[in-house]
Structure formats: C-alpha cells, structure tokens
Length: 271
Image (tube, helix red, strand yellow):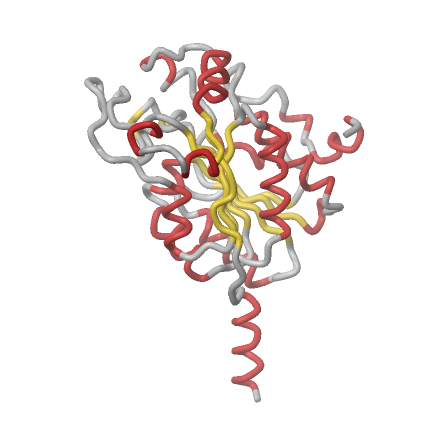
C-alpha cells in the first residue's frame, strides 16, 4: 500500500511517538490503519477509543475521531458513542491490564451485549507504562516488579474469555505475523457485533529485561518460534502446548447486535 494512502490517517505533528524503540505497538498501529484504508473507511466516520497505558496512547497518533478516556473504562465510552451514532465505525484499543483487570467487567459485558465495536487488545503480559507490574495475562513463573520471584496467578486466556462472554468474532495473532493481524482486524471491523482481536506483542523494557528477552528482536524470534496455528494445536497435548501461543480465528458467529436491538425497542415503545 502506498505511503500516501496511510499518511492522512496520521497526526504527524505528534511524532516522534512515546513508545520505546522496537515496541510492537507501531506494527499494530500500521495494521489498523492499513485495514481502515483497505476497507474504504473515512476518517470522519471512524472513532478510535482508548483507556490508559502505552497502547492507549495510540489514538493520539491517528487522525480520526479519537477519545483518550480513563483506565479500563474505554469500552463504556465507546458503547455510548456507538449507541448515539450506530453508523460510525468504532474501534477500541486496549492493553491486557487495561482490558482484563480494571476494565474486566466492561469487557465481558460488551461481549455479552454483542455491540458492534471492534476491540483490539495488545497483550504484552505486563503493565508497561506504570512500572512493570504483573498483569492478568502475565505467565506463571514470569518475573515482574510485583512478582520478583515469578508470578503464581493463573493468567486469563483473553480469547476464551471473549468467547465465553458472547463475542461474535474472536481471533489472535502476534506482531511476528503482521499480515495476519491486518486480515483479522479487517474481518473484525466488517463483523456485525462485538469483535475481539488479541495481538500478542512485547514490552522488552519492562517484561523482556526481567525474562531473558531484553531486545525487540529477541521477542520477535520468540513469537515466531512459539506460535502455532489453531489446527495444529488441536493435535497437541496440553503438555506440548505449554508455553506456546495458539493463533487463529476462534469464533465467527452471528447474533443479535445491541444497537439494532436497542433501536427496535425504541420503535416498539413508541408504537
């Protein structure tokens, strides 16, 4: 895709960005913008919402309608926007802690409502911007500032959580598969209902240095070597899958979308 098609979607006056050199969030930003351009979306009809965190700084760099909200509450803001103007394309970008810790209830209820919002969860297994604390997705045994001897909490599987809560589309990729990230994001945006795309990325500054992956390249190699397609994972034992990242599409189903149900209710009440 020509650079000229992407550039109008960037607020170049805010560059250079705040992310650490080599951060995977830049790959995800590019995948989102390429998806929007490929789908023929306009900046005027697109909303990007976020909460607080490294990933949540992303809307500041996107030249569209953007909302930088409070920690864990971005889906509440996005829900209000979508209900007020259902014709808008609404995307919510979140980190793993932002989404599944303080924002956990908002996340599961957005899935349950099946509102037509695309949630892109950037999972780097850590709270990066606030000091490297363990998050709800920090692997057992991984070190963090709040788990100097290794985390003992069982982590969430974000995709299984979204599937169980009722999302219409759920997929996972890593930044080592940027084309796959883009494909899943496009499908998520096109899906009528709540869509979740979990993208496994890294924080080499806060997570990597404590867990023997101190450089961006170390993490890319790790993702490439440990990613397995969903079909292959089905043939593996739980022991064989330990430490692996299962990628693919996990849910693609139809269901009553929330804003449509809400409008039907209004019509029925008004008679």
